[in-house]
Image (cartoon, rainbow, N blue to C red; front, side, top):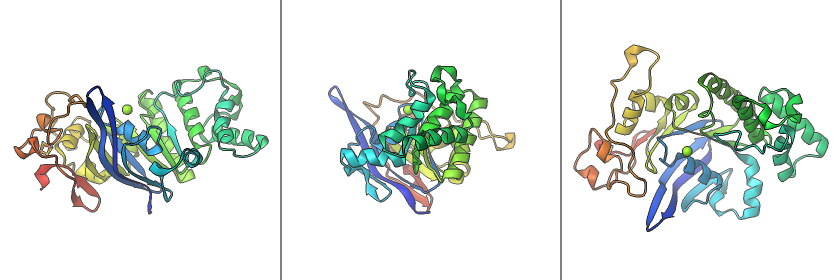
Amino acid sequence: NPPLLEVHGLKKHFAAGSTTVKAVDDVSFSIAEGQTLGLVGESGCGKSTTGRSVLRLIEPTEGSVRFMGQEITLLPAGPLRAMRRHMQMVFQDPYASLNPRMSIGEVLEEPLIVHGLHDRATRKRKVAEALDMVGLNPAYAARHPHEFSGGQRQRVGIARAIITRPRLVVADEAVSALDVSIQAQILNLLRELQQELGLTYLFVSHDLAVIRHVSDTIGVMYLGRMVELGAREDIYARPSHPYTQALLSAIPREHPREQRQRIVLQGSIPNPAAPPAGCHFHPRCPSCMEVCQREAPTPIKLSPTHTVACHLYR
Ligand code: SF4
Ligand code: MG
């Protein structure tokens, strides 16, 4: 499939006092139609900022975002609003993202009204249909968010995201607030909807087990940079960046035989306002070389589907 979304050289820099935080620093990737790219990394690595910049919920500082043949970063406000019909977001905390005073029916009808879609009767039908698609009783349209469990509220959040029939859904920690058993149900629902509606996902999560479950392609981020990008098999069978190797060593395998030796990283993530010079990962890297302290590694292609930014592969 040709790429639905192509992101090139994306940067998001924030001013913080006298310094600049490079929350997203030259990130590139693409997602083929109907596929899922999982963005993974610890809190503060820039994965959420990347997701939001793609939708221009925050304005990127630099770079290109091509979606459905349009340069999103250059769209004026009006056409950007219209474009949002095709690019929707599912948030981590479904409760915080639902207006408690609105009924579920009103919550779901709102995007249709905003985008001027359908007449009133058709909108009601679309609301019932969306509830049914996410496994909720259409009669729940009359209820309010506080009457639902966390998992049900996330189903409402998903129904709201798909009701305009978008092509791309950005899911930011969409299951992180839920119990593990509920997580699996929501992930299965997202997969079913992907097949049914041909959705493309940009799936942001700190949880590698979740990312493994949903992704066709995986991007690993560290302090604003994409350190490794590859097909799921590339990342799980041949993790190449020392940071990816450490992250993977920490998650349990189905078969103990496949369990990697646990790599315990020294230290914690440095302050993003003052990242280490050269390779940002160098103070924590078990393979750190002299060059790593001076020079930032550029992405190197290990195969047509697999890229790593690390001096070990020069
Ligand atoms: Fe480690 Fe150097 Fe590779 Fe960075 S560039 S991950 S410090 S080996
Ligand atoms: Mg985040």
